[in-house]
Length: 152
Image (cartoon, rainbow, N blue to C red):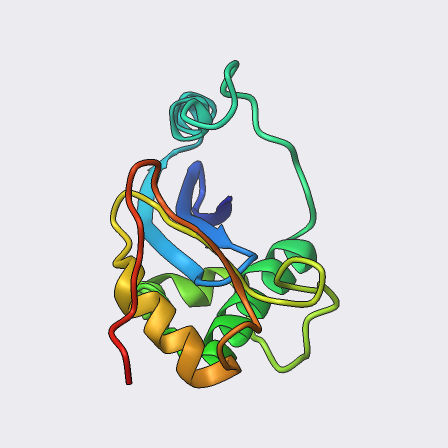
């Protein structure tokens, strides 16, 4: 997701958020990037080109983004995971958060850890085992890699 806000006349400030709604919450954030209004469309096409073939983002309300980002952070914290270290720098772009998210996180009521290229699967599974208990979450590891927790 990306959020653009007016910075000065003809200038916008943009922040980006990579959210894992199944388990880890806010995995990455960037910004704020300040740019001229006319540069925003090209910036957004480039930003979204990794996930949208044509680079055209879907629009939604700031309230929806706020519930998605802050809600995922709250959910991940309940599982023992903190948001990306730069979240403090980009959280203000979303506006204040004093609510409980209207979005349900996890998959079918339980956390689902889908390993990404920069995730530590052993540490993540240990955290989930500690916070929600063995058998109360699902995980998908990178193909060809098995995860075995040491015996207690």
